Image (cartoon, rainbow, N blue to C red; front, side):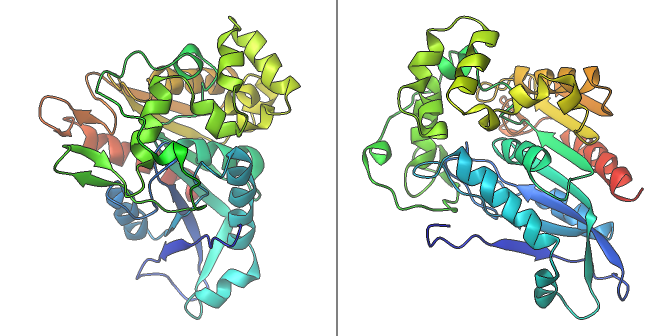
Length: 327
């Protein structure tokens, strides 16, 4: 994509039988769609370990990062990823006798990765048979939090210089913990700029590539008006909530397990609640767990560690998608 290679990392179970068709778990990382990497500090090691122990193939995949890329590139490259996984070409990279089963794919997304997972469900082929969304964004991008600014997040934010630069297109800007700042960061300043954008209600300008769209949407007062505006501008496919607002479309989603921190100030839990409500209304097998007091990443703010019970929740989520993969 614009001379930027997109890569995936693949882990295989040691116990795979000769010519056995392996179900696939695909992991999409977080980072606000603007930063992060498929194998950085926020990598879901627990999900990878459970997957290969259960006899599944596990894939962590790149996707285009916003600015200069936009949602259009995420859609197109997610579809290309699925085409590659289901094509004979992937066999060239597999040990002799190992085969993947493109008919049994579960997509998993953490934070911004949940947006990519939903895009895979809506636009990619073959269709996933299960979805796992963890503290995910992308299900309510046209509400006031996004178009007028996140008023819940209270930590200091800085615009930085990244948004004033002409960035090199990339699919990888790994997140790390900066001990000086005592916060997450990446080498280009993408994470800091993303936080500034969401607090100031300007994220959708960079997400869509249409400068000024956030202001246009903020001037509209109802969800219906905002849906109509982005549809008029030819942007409806960027927003999963528009797809899910139609019961017949929502019914096409696979069984889905959704969990979120009840005190998440970055991606508000209302996003997951809205997705859950749309899927339940359409009759999709869906579970939602909101953990009281947990902030983004399912962290207990009092300790800086995962909230009590999160490990059990992770196992519950995995068992949900595992059941769908082995039907």
